[in-house]
Amino acid sequence: MGANRTTVASILERCPEAILQPPEVIKAQQHLWRSVYSNDKDLVKTIERFPGSFFTFIHKENQTRNIQYFQELGLKKKIISRFLASAPDIFCNSVDKNKGMIEALQESYLQLGGSEANMKVWLVKLLCQDPFILSKSPGKVRNNLESFQRLGFTDSEALRLLSKLKGFISDVTGNSMESSAVYTKNIFKCNDEELKEMVLKCPALLYYTVPVLRERLEGLLTEGISIEQIKYSPSVLELTTQIVQYRIKTLFGLGYNVKDVHLEQLIGTKKDFEVSLTKIQPKRQRPLFNPVAPLDLDN
Image (cartoon, rainbow, N blue to C red; front, side, top):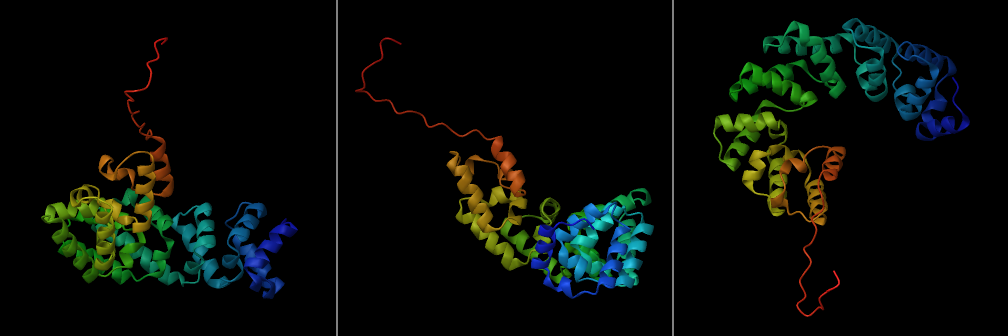
């Protein structure tokens, strides 16, 4: 396939069971994966990055049928190849299981007011964010959408949450979400509308359990961040206490106190934070006046 000795050594070092697969099995797997890869060079690069996906998850019949099904859905080969590499488990599912979840997601999207014209784009985006949702239960998605309604979210708001929660929609339970919502409402002393506004900004308020929310909230308060600041920028609760402490320390090194900055500067991925730092100028310390120093009369 064009792999050099170093690549082969790297693959066998991280996935030694590859050596146990019969050559005819590997050839069949290679032929199958070639159906969604443009050339062997790209395929070898993927195998080097995800050797376990290629050599361990060999369910040829299910893989073949799922690849065909995803192609029928209109997914591009690039997306299917990404799923094969990073989420091989979903190709071990029967086609009926994957089809059942996708149909449940499509049905929920349309019931909440989504348009038929935008459904494919929405579905592809959701699957790319979390393909493992296909291994979850369709019933959980429906039950959690009912929980949104009990919490007072309109159909359009529930549709936004369904998109923002990604795969988490099938990981949480209705009781857990409702407990987290009550805790949030009590801590921030907000009414139903304010709670919905906060949740739409930060869906983590629903999928994190009360103990997790309490731990992160206490960590923020310990760093000097106020309840009002958090209420205005609730997405800061998506960060672990350790990440928050590191970012606050970094800003402090530039001369900024946590009360001097907007919490939005703390939020986001590592790359987002690094970009925000480039927009912040370090504060210069004002030089102290020394009354006994001689005056520079020449200047």
